[in-house]
Length: 170
Image (cartoon, rainbow, N blue to C red):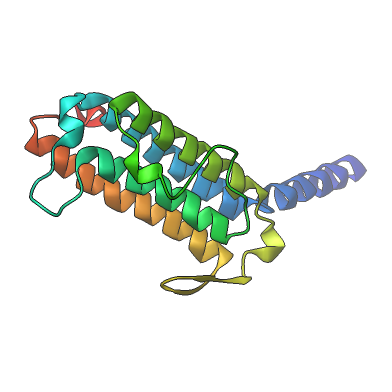
């Protein structure tokens, strides 16, 4: 009986510890999937298609990927994380070339995923100010996730308009 109680106590302590970062780990898991899909979509476009846009005044393929990267950095900065060395938000929109855009996108996702893991569970309800309102830290993390998903949809439409089937749906 003592062994059973000890086992139950140990398992409950492990479960409690595992739940400590549940929000961060859950968001990171879905964010990984979005990153994988956006990465495979970024690879599927040709170099020339990175300049394609559906209409004047609308972001091109390359600009849409860079917009996602900028937003990843921007919102995580508002969560209190410093930009990595060499990242310049003011010039990021001028990055050209498929390989350079993909590199910027991947680095922004890696930065955000690393930052997600550093947000302390006790601070998830803390309020931060974004240009479009006040949000809890948890909500800001969800905004990063939702924003990248929104533009994944945009880029799927761009891909289909260019005869590209999203690689994960073939």
